[in-house]
Length: 149
Image 1 (cartoon, rainbow, N blue to C red):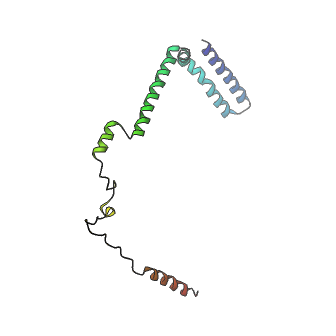
Image 2: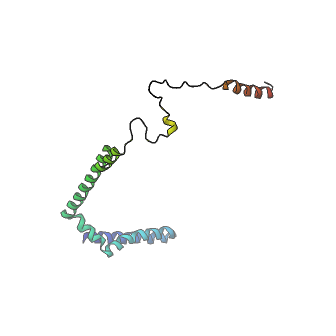
Image 3: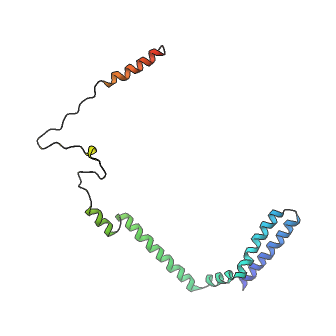
């Protein structure tokens, strides 16, 4: 009952301020103030204020909010533990069954893996690239000569 009275008084005061603003020829601002002032009156007329007041002062409603909060915390805690462990028990078991051997990296292509030499053979020596440095410098020298340097 008190909440409805307060909301109605706020609406009346807001409409009074809107009238004074309109008198000062600020019609756009007056319309905006009137719109804000009618919101509490509309909430009273629809019964929302009464429902909120009954809920706010009800111990059972607050206990229900507490149970909902506890439930949310339990969901969040289980999700955090799953992330740290790497998924659910089924997901971890499926990952172990499909795991690749330790010698190959997951997602590595055949050229990246290379061919291992057979036992008793030494790995093939790497070939040095042919004098590529000379070609690079000759290009640079040609450019410098072209500009007269």
